[in-house]
Image 1 (cartoon, rainbow over the protein chains, first blue to last red):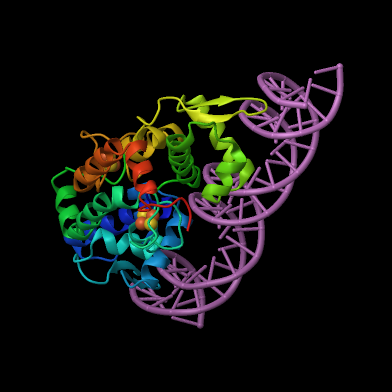
Image 2: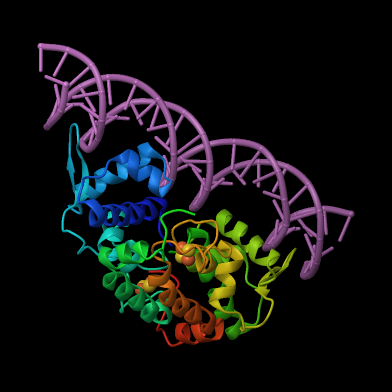
Length: 143
Length: 143
DNA sequence: TTAAAATAAGACAAAATTGTCCTGATATAA
DNA sequence: TTATATCAGGACAATTTTGTCTTATTTTAA
Ligand code: FES
Ligand code: FES
């Protein structure tokens, strides 16, 4: 469903949200990649993308790190689109140039509503909700 | 969402269903790859997988080709699982070894219902439904 | 001022996915 | 029997995605 980069991005964002709720300190790459069990250098690349998309703010130098740009009020849809673009949620599921009512692919009408619901769920899930689940030990960053 | 192979597989199956509804003749790779606009040799590979999964029956030699194994009563979920396996519909969305209630990833509870609905839609959509749409010029194999 | 701790960025490498080509096997019609 | 049209399958190639390494830059504390 999601690319590996997108999977990591979601974990990154939720982990930072969770950390900031506890201490409000910046979080560095090393702590992130350990917490979510991801390759460090690759994680750093994804962090750069999240900064470019304005979902994160980075601070260089000693005691630097990453923090949320809009404290907690960022949803999963924003994260997914920042990393994987609009293909998953707006593009044609069978690879047509564009998803359209005028030239629908063979699954268009059948899967339209399911994708709408997925989109709604993604939009309705912000970092606050997930950070809460993590605090309640009802969701985890790694196995 | 789906792999390229899976995208082609869906088009392949729906095209064969559509052709058989019209003429009940076997369909060959060349006709398929032209109709769905896919690379011929790659399409042949996917056809072999669909035969191995018992969704299609192949006939070698002159006037050979492919036909549905269970006339029309094959659904999208079967096709997707034949090609992409159980990862998309049953695996963890964030790459954990398994999707589980006991060790849920950070999106597990949030996206569970959306995925259930997707699964239902896929199971409820069989080739008959799509072939009908195609006949009514309400769905297409290529742009 | 210097050392240390952090991000930024580009080049490179490995792995997975997608796609091609060639040869062999099989069935049918003439 | 032979030519032809078809699927089967393996080796290979190209592309994309994932992941690594190295060096530069920035910031702060001592
Ligand atoms: S999903 Fe294919 S055209 Fe809309
Ligand atoms: S989707 Fe990740 S554990 Fe269920």
